[in-house]
Figure 1 (cartoon, rainbow, N blue to C red):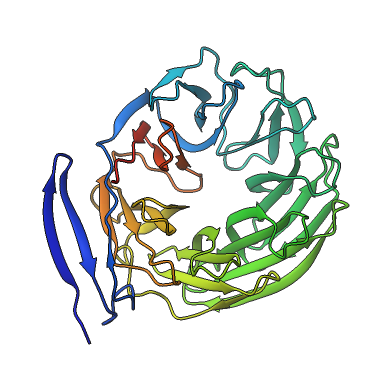
Figure 2 (tube, rainbow, N blue to C red; figure 1 turned 90 degrees about the horizontal axis):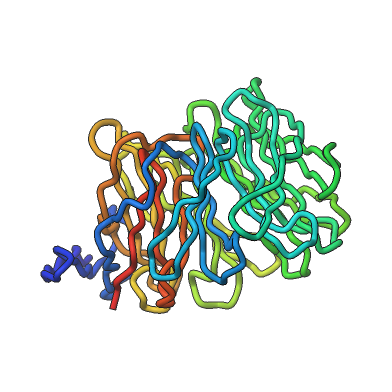
Length: 387
């Protein structure tokens, strides 16, 4: 069995690495040479502690903006060249942000989850200039994550909310746009750690993919919920007894068969790949292995994109170590459902918090490559320079 071959090259941005690999207790069984991702050093876009963000166009100029939250929620309006201008006003404290058009005026609105222990969410209608109207309150059981999708089929963004109950259990709640009371709440297995809204089975109706772990994060789960198109959800399959609590989810066609797959990164760094059947079902194989982070470290968030510009999807993970400096890793995909060993991309400053969504992915400078934004003691921007 081949060992990993490390080739070292030096560029203007520091060392870059190419890996030739085969599994020997490592991350991948691919034997292809996978190109590395090259990013410029992080640039500080805004000072001020943040632990969650959302990326969208809030001022209708076709350029991606960022809103980041912590003790306050504030915006960065993109100039389209990878730089940003800070908005003047600030919104209230929040731990999670989501964006979409919830009232049908073609302006991007903002939904926030209150600070830990607060059972409220707020929706802010956008003015299409980076500012917002006074908020409307939604009451939920114990919201930790909110994402938006048109579950009722009326063209307006509705709310999918992951609740983390004090008992340790979780639930999925659906709020139809324009209504402050939830339409449906379904209990889930243990505490949720991730939620995505997407069409899992190809029927044109948004579904929900939700994941988490038990109290000790020693066992994880992934759960599917299928939308009827009228605001209600039907419970799908529960994939339980995974090797570790799930901290992050990503989706895309990782093996080139035209069907939606899922990747799950566990709380302690294992990368799990679920091969999609095109109808909302997944087959989870063995973890690609070993670890994408040290076992004592905590994975905070993940993102998906073609970070090394080889037309194949990769995964980035944001990690807060048990001791030392938080860091960002890229796990390159080979386009066949296999992955290379992690590439260390950058060290991140202090105050990287759990319980939020501090990683944002988007093309901030218009070159067609996915860039990365990270919220911690400030908001950092890493521009993709992969050839």
